[in-house]
Length: 354
Image 1 (tube, rainbow, N blue to C red):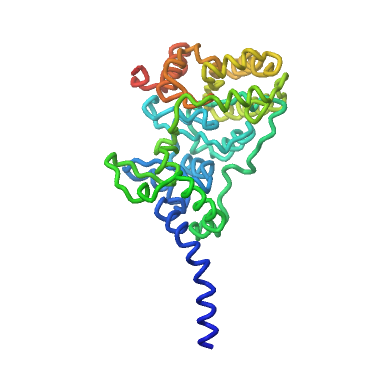
Image 2 (cartoon, rainbow, N blue to C red):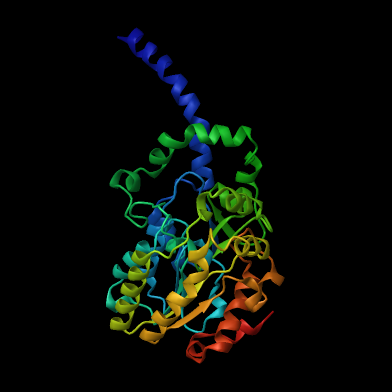
């Protein structure tokens, strides 16, 4: 019996040794932190940055945060609304933008999960142009669904079993260093996840995003030239998506929520490349004519910021072809408020700061 136990122990030493390093990395970096613990961070005074590399539950975390905190102003959309910060708005604000939303129906489902007692007064709604492309098919099933029970109770094991090879890969590719996990920072920001620790990438306590790179639009230009990913060609506007937008506006009107919907800006080089292909991106340039009357019918605010020059957003830089800097979004919001009196009651004086 002792010999059998000894053999079993020797047999188990190998997998234990293999898993020990990635388990420590996942634990030390916060990759395995429970979603409910991330949500609870909002109730503390410490600033934080969450950017996990091996698990994605941003949609769930942001929905639960909205239900817990009941913000009066809510930014809703993909990561392209991520530049809106708390100090732009006078009432209580939260940015529920998430890269997990890949269809407009996700935003509509998000709204319907907010009970009337916890709904905001204003929704700043980012409507990605790709949503309206009849050829756009990417989708993430239930982007704000609650994680499985096992993942909630044993988060370290849940991440470890699927991600341990990637931890080794990323370490040997020098995407993170051991020193990143042990060094202390003087800025008082708690960083959770390897993306946040090693690359300063993730979402902050007000839900807004920060990116680690600037002026990286070569990938966008490549996709435009090759009819790929976010920039697949499309000549017509998706009637189904327009119908979903109208359902969203109708629901907000019924609830008494004001909607400020906008088409997000592209970087100057990307916008120029899109403009040079009017046939391939006909749906994009037709959008304002389809959406403006719809928003006017419901008495809501609408703005087309597809061209960054409209509000001189291009002077402030872009992280990539689709994500303007925070200064760019500050300029965009000020431009919008100056042209639409209905937004002034929601705007803080700080939004005038350059």
